[in-house]
Length: 96
Ligand SMILES: O=C(O)C[C@H]1C=CC(=O)O1
Image (tube, rainbow, N blue to C red; front, side):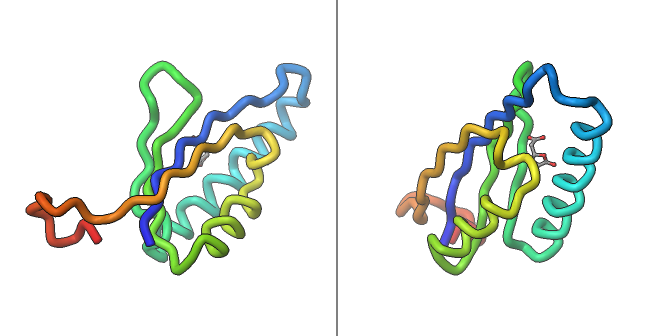
């Protein structure tokens, strides 16, 4: 199942920079592991924003939920999830 996820990161400016750096490093490691597993298929930065557009390829709504809950930066994110399906006019074989 494919999902488009928009993540807007809103870290409080009062947070200890060392804690922020640790959270970002942990987030990066988990993100890259999920990308290597093919579950986090794409990640794009939104120009000028601390936000990303991502595509997840997971087994179920439950799996997506568990992944999102596991992200170290999740408590500091606004998240919007959109389920996707193959467009009938798509010419890309890897869209589904
Ligand atoms: O930077 C972000 O967009 C937030 C988050 C998502 C992946 C990652 O490494 O950090």
